[in-house]
Amino acid sequence: MKDITISDSIIYTGVDDKTIDLFESQYVVPNGISYNSYIILDDKTAIMDTVDKRGTSEWLANVKNTLGDRKPDYLVVSHLEPDHAGNIQTLAEMYPDMKIVGNAKTFAMIGQFFDMELSDDKKVTVGEGDTLELGSHTLQFFMAPMVHWPEVMVIYEQSEKVLFSADAFGKFGALDTDEDWTCEARRYYMNIVGKYGAPVQALLKKASTLDIQTICPLHGPILGEDLGYYIGKYQVWSSYEPEDEGIVIACASIHGNTMEACKKFAEILTEKGAKKVSIFDLARDDMAEAIEDAFRYDTLVLAAASYDGGAFPCMEDFLYHLKSIDIRIFDICYQHIRKLIPNSLQSF
Ligand code: FEO
Picture 1 (spheres, rainbow, N blue to C red):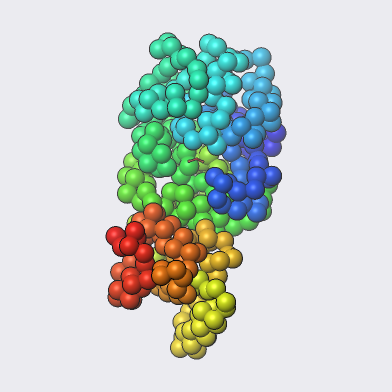
Picture 2: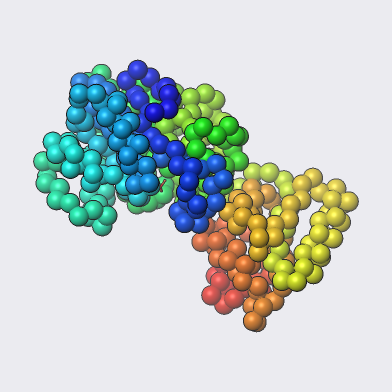
């Protein structure tokens, strides 16, 4: 198990996945992904989420190693998506006396994922602001619906001032990856949580009332210093305001001619003093990276060859993603681009 120190009584038990080809079957993760899980050891023991089934055996070994002879009293489920909840049933069957802590939506949804009987005495249903005493540690629950699914909640541990933030503040990349947080956290946020700016803003408002010293997300590193930086990034990203000045040229070229035009255009923009110009070949480059930069920079140029009476399909795919994550576009050029957009996307 990795030695990731949170405190003597809050232990990291998650796993890295460096063999997955596509996270959520759509995102390339060249440095893998971590499925984070934690155990709080006190008079009562609480496991904070499980992991994806891809990491079951390593995770169970971590759990047993951390618990020793003890048994878990609680499994706290902050998010039911299978990359975190994949082992709920396994754990419940291993520890039949363990109680599962969730909110009303958690228990309304859990039957969609598991074929398990969960009697009322095995469920602890929590609501906004409720607390659960473990001994010297106290968990407080805050609902965070649609950050990223309806049942999501975050948990604040009062004595050590730790926020278990579910998908929020997560990042692509296994924990043994030495890379900048911001780039892969932004790509993760824009593509996975980007649609839910208003719920993220609501969560940030709640978080602002708490004295947080550590953030424990479900993916990526534990954040213990300079929290204002990370929270500030989330404020910008969830507001749909551009983060930086720059021009993104998203190009859908069939035979290379549209790409040549885009490169020429980029040259002219640079000559005229544009501080940052980046071109994406939508047929080949990482779509998630293109989406990330479309959010990040303040100007977006779309250039597509026509195809079957519409835009070349990789442009339609790009537009689909922009629409689905609710990017805000306020540029007059949109009126011209609109002519290229299929009818199904005219509400974009
Ligand atoms: Fe990491 Fe929404 O699951």
